Amino acid sequence: MTVEQAIHPKLSVRGATKVYNTRSGDLLAIDRCSVDVLDGEIVSIVGPSGCGKTTLLWSMSGLHGLSAGEVLLDGKPVTGPNPDISMVFQNANLLPWRNLDANINFPFEIKGIKPDRIWIDELLNRVGLEGFGNRFPGELSGGMQQRAALVRALSFKPSVLLMDEPFGALDSFTREEMNRLVEEIWLDTKTTIVLITHSIEEAIFLSDRVVVMSPRPGRVANIHTVPFARPRSMEIMATKEVFDLTNAIKQEIVGNQQSRYPADRAAAPSQSVQTAAQ
Picture 1 (cartoon, rainbow, N blue to C red):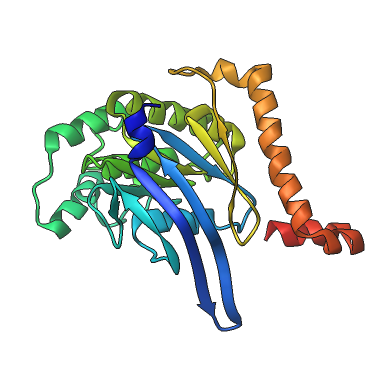
Picture 2 (cartoon, one colour):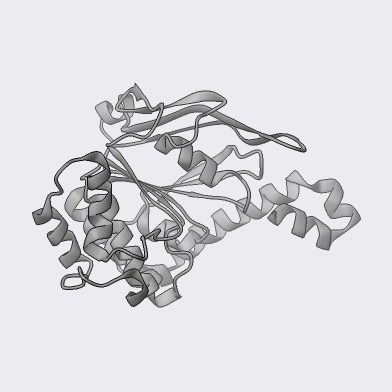
């Protein structure tokens, strides 16, 4: 980390707090979350289900306003959707009546700007979708649809890419393939990436740092540095170093859950586990 990176992070979250007003009362989703993401860094966010990971990510994108705190991109407040920030969602969200090329071009049509077809064709070739431009989403596998969503997100050449559990619905083989693909693209573009994942192994394989969040209301409980050089091979995932780091993060998440619900755990262990997972 250079001194300039430390002083001027690419993306900075400061005291992010989000309260949702529901029919049953106010719900504090995240509470005073602060984290800096350096230029060209990959950061993963992990934590128990319902801890506010997605709320935090959507706040970074400008799609969700904060109740308190702020998000800064290159030192400037993010107050709404930003052309320098792109997002890949849990589902590919491809329009079924449009073919692949038309789906990728759709955001450009909305903005009234011309797509960079040379760059898009390069991305399609990189992700193995060259020649599939006239195919409709229903003709593509789940992995191919997520690749298309990745191309669409990168087609604008964003400086920050946010990814909300994009490979969670894929089989393990395809998921590993997508992880390798993301790393390959990152090695070429050095796009700053923030990834939400439930897979600690995925977080370790892809990330420079892993942020661990506490149960709701989500807070930053710890940040782990991943000490493995790039490019990374799948073989490192079988090493003792990865096992130890995976276990440390897993035990941290479990420990945070248990400390969050001590009374429930003492009264009814099975109920405590169920409550903590919500």
